[in-house]
Amino acid sequence: MEKKQWYESLFENYGQKYDNEIFTQGTIGECDFIELELGSDKSLKILDVGCGTGRHSIELTQRGYTVTGIDLSESQLSRAKEKAASNNLQINFIRQDARALPFINEFDFAIMLCEGGFPLMETDEMNFEILKSVTRSLKSHGKFIFTTLNGLFPLYHSVQEFCSDISVEGNATYRSNTFDLMTFRDHNITEFEDDLGNKKTLDCNERYYVPSEITWMLQSLGFKKIDILGAKLGAFSRNDKLTTEDFEMLVIAEK
Image (cartoon, rainbow, N blue to C red; front, side, top):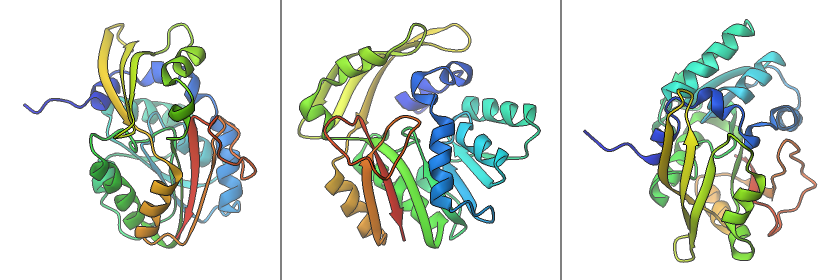
């Protein structure tokens, strides 16, 4: 049997605990920004890639938008479906691998927030497959908004210190971070307790990207307008220039 990747193991039985993590608390503000970018046009079809427990999909559906949420994790999706049902919402949540989405020119708008798949893959090629797959899913003038890890941050700061500064009792903890300057990958040991009370320790590695790499990849996929900004939790804004202080970057790309 094929060994599970760390991101697959992480999201098994981790739906409820995930919703308490500090990085999932900015949903309302993030959806306010998305709505501005949508021009409040309720006719637009939205794809939520790596939707997790459905927090953005649910909030946008409550605001009157049509959203399809995809994720690799059964546990996250079942939590998303529970939450949607308890809010009397009909949302199409589907288990899909973001690298091989079945959609062609189907959506006006795609979001991929809070590292929804990208940049968690084992290789740069796999991460690029996600961008390629989402691009195929978009209509000819589609817009793609995503957040990803800012490669400028670890050049100036300790990732481990940043993670311990924002950690809260009961949430996942990260230690033994080592940032590789040749690959721009941060290797760490993540410890957490899942929804069933099992303590887990995983060897994780995530790819940090610099703005020029993101720009080059998106241009090669046919995006004409690319803006890269600093991503402030729950307070995305086109006024926030990306700096070395931003742990994440916000990317807005238009075909």
